[in-house]
Length: 482
Image (tube, rainbow, N blue to C red; front, side, top):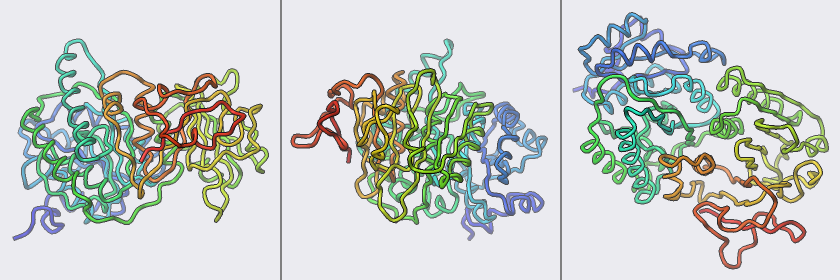
């Protein structure tokens, strides 16, 4: 008897004409549905087709239907969207069958989003960009938009979701800010190797847990989350228990087998930083040897921020790069990304990129190497990893290539509390897998105490005062996170 997710059985769900239309397709946008006529119609109408074509990617939409009786299938047909009729019951089964079918057609990436109009279709190109830049899994972390009529109910859901995230982090060591998100993108081949097996709403929890344990490159970005259109299928108490049990079942397993790790580019890391912020202005200064990275970053920033004001400056020679100020009068809300020359074969002697985030004035040093000595306080950056006018530095380091678990306070800040500063820090830490990252807080250059560090942490007894601290600079406290 054929397994319901085998290519042979799955191929009968889509007509031959539509099946052939997926040959050579890089991205599929998968929309699981069950009686979502109105939500699907609005979701399809809002899909940013022009932006999705901007990078030259080939993509197709795919509606996965679980037996709708309200006209959902007719909405898809009228929009010319192929329909995949699942054989089993449940959202998890729908996703597993669809991913197996897409793999059989050679589709590289899938962006999955609920078709109830809660998720921002405008960010589909952002997920595509991150996947194409080296992410194996991209998770949209919901930031609900309150409405007076639904505030109480929404608050209950937010608290329940945060409790599940807390459990995933504390009891299973999973560094996820939203373990139940219905908006995510994945490398199809990698997802199939995880051998997913759940059939219900717990599918995301299983996927995220197994992806982390297998060492996949994971990126998390904040997304707005609206009130759904139509009747909710999820039952909070019953499905919440199933999700919790799934987190504990798969999250505590040592591994499902290490997968071949894709190389995450600096573009991926930079895009994940800029997606945390609402800035629409960006200055990119790059050494001539980094032209390709710089041009890709500019192009994709414009893709995820249509109409953005972006300036690219290509410079030749180390001295010119080392004279780039990160903080100057009149810079306002502009983000700054500096891509210095890389030293081949010499180890992490310099950062792969240095970023100033405008909302918090944080400086993020990707790659962990010290700033070049030529950067001086007169030009905005002091020697030896010490940005001028910046305080409260600490390093995010990895243990055997895995990120440190997120603290409970950061989970709550990212999902319930309104601190934008705290949210930014939580996302930086969540996306630190595969890198050594140094983060400096904004503000006056004063001695930084424990209050400037996450969760009130201070330096361990006997540790130096932080990364590359020197006597002639204001001392700061460093925390090494494992």
